[in-house]
Every structure is written in structure tokens, then in C-alpha cells.
Length: 142
Length: 145
Image (cartoon, rainbow over all chains, first blue to last red; front, top):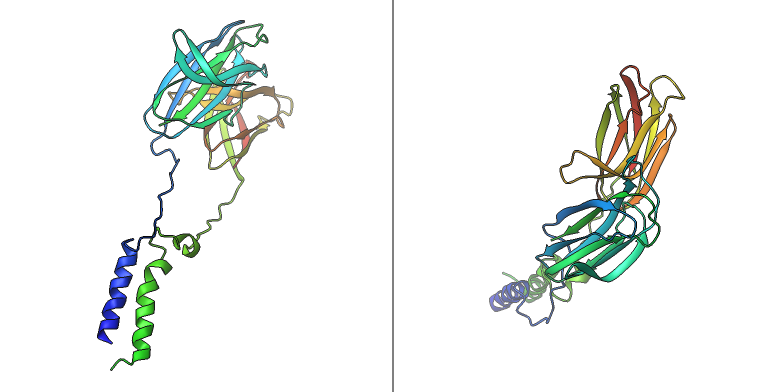
């Protein structure tokens, strides 16, 4: 009887330690542990395409939001559609792997789990810009 | 004296205890883990009341605890129903002192701005359009997720 009790305790400890050969795998946690928030601000003129490069240090989500688009003179928010792109720097431009035509919003337009590396976001005039626009892109990464 | 039956029972309890406690990441963990549901009231309504000086502005941070719609309404602007103020909703800049607008309007009491938002930090700004002649109170109603 005492042996049975001891056996029970051994089994209990063994299962707690994971030594029963369960063959489990640890799921990847894509939660950003220490997110960095960067704000890319600038002015978009007709036919313009300013871009901004940043470095990610961990394989975590990158969230890109064209959060503000205003008339550069009056400061009033505008609903002009512009191109927001995400990609990798390529010489003097940003070679995009994703792009969307959008206007300012508080919900991210782009989300991707990116491996550590150098990336870029670009704001470009798709032919809709007739006056200078001030923009702000919020980039959250780690 | 422990009987054979009680000893077997003790063996069974000892063997299964770690699984039942959800402290193992084995194959049974997902079926035995206890899920705690935290009920958070959402949306949340807040009031931002202050006074606007001549030529001045007011700034307020907004935190969205989860995704949803943020709306801001200029509930009152002085004692006049026609007095207009500037109202803007957006994100704070990198210094946290300027609100970069996603939406903005020039409105009297009743004017509203809204936008769907991710969880995060946002801001609103109220400013004098150049029409104030004296310090004027205002109230903005904020509804956030």
C-alpha cells in the first residue's frame, strides 16, 4: 500500500514535470512584448512619395496606420485617398510588398508578423493630391 | 491503516492532480484549463469639461482598451447654441503634446466625430476658431471601447 502511495506521488511529480513524453509543442506567441511606436510625419505633395525605414528586432507583429491626413495649410482633416505601402528599402525608394489606397483612420491598414530586419512604409500620391497634405503614419513594432 | 481501496484512490488523485490544476502544458491542458472571463464595461462614456481661453486650445488623451468605435461630441460650448469651436480626433505625436487629426470639424454644440479604432492611445483637441471674446467653458462627451 505504501508502495502504491509512493508510485502515485512519482507519477504526479513526473506528469507535472512533463516527463511523460506528451510530445507537445509550445505555440508561438505573437504578442508584442515590448512594442515600439514610431510616428512617420511628413508632407505629401502632388506626385510625391516620401518613405520611412525602420528596424524590427523581434519576429513580432508590425502594425501600420495612416492615422492622420490633413491640409498642410489649414490643419483640417481631409478624406483624400492616398497610397500607403509597406515593404523593404531599395536604394532611394521603398519596394513595396503591400499597398492600399486609403485615407486617415484610427484602425491599422496593415498588419503582419515580420521577421527581424529593415522595413519601410511609403505614402504616395496616386494622382489625387492637389494641395500639400500633412500626414502621420503610426508604426508599432518590436 | 489504509485499505487497498483508499490507496488506489490516493494513487489516482495524485496522478491526475497536476492536470486538473492546469499547470501542465501537456495534451490534456487545453481541455482542463480554467477560463476566467473578465467582464469589462464597454463602451465607456467620459466627460471632458474645461474652459477655452481666447485663442487657446485644450487637449485630452483617450485610451481605447480594445477595438471599437471612438466618438467625441461637443456637448456644450459656452451658453450659446450657435457658438462654434474646433473639434479634432486623432493620435498624439511622438512628444504626446500635439494631436494629429484623423477627423476634425468646426462645430457648435451637438457636433460629433467618430472613427473605428484599434486598442491604443488617441487624443482629442478643442480650440478657439478665433470667435471667442472671453474664456468659455465647454464639455465634450467621449465614448470609447
